[in-house]
Image 1 (tube, rainbow, N blue to C red):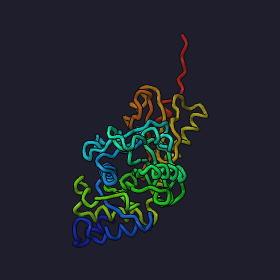
Image 2: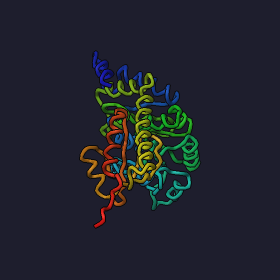
Image 3: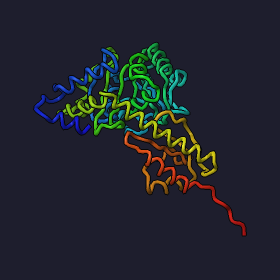
Length: 338
């Protein structure tokens, strides 16, 4: 990424996307997503989500999402405050929507007292580390399109999803019926930058203007575009994401072995490990002690659930050191009798 930025600084280029790198990015995105794809580089994932959803909804439109979706829980109210979007969150056990779950909020069309559910937003991989199969995405797209709704995908970790599924991006996006995509870069190695990728041109309007309106238009856009080109060229996206997934698998299998041998106790898995996330519950106090040396988030403080994420730069040594710390904290205690 640093090399790509340095190369893009090699001579004068026209500002606001009229540069050779952003033009090349369009070609690269079409190689991955199909001939109708158009990419709009932005600064960050929240900007990508808000701008993408704004472009597919009228002022009276609403978005059906999971209750754990990033747009609902982690974007500081940006969809509501910046674009006035109404979110219709649905509780799910695994961070995934289904047609039946979407149906809990996809109703009331024509009712002037209800925000009109006109878009569905799914996350791939989900905030709980789970994964939509190609068929699951297609089923959601069919359900949404039959009701006149647009399907948005938050692809903050889209590369990890593709690596886990063993398919290219297009199979579970364009070909599966996704209309518009927030393509994640920073979680797979970019210094900064993401992109809104329009897959179905008929559903999105005004992105040329909305990107500026939402403070996501970079004057020196080439420095975002050059990074995305580097990521999507020569399989770098796949190597980095596959490595992150492998580190999560190493952590999970190491924990399972420690549990099976009785070396540790008190840890329980709460979700499948499909890509680069491991979710567990820990006994009281353990997470805070571990955080003296390792950085991670509480997911649900009430239940002791935590989220452990691995990345493109996580090493085997990192995983082994973390397992050793867990072994120290969670080794069974022998009670002493008087």
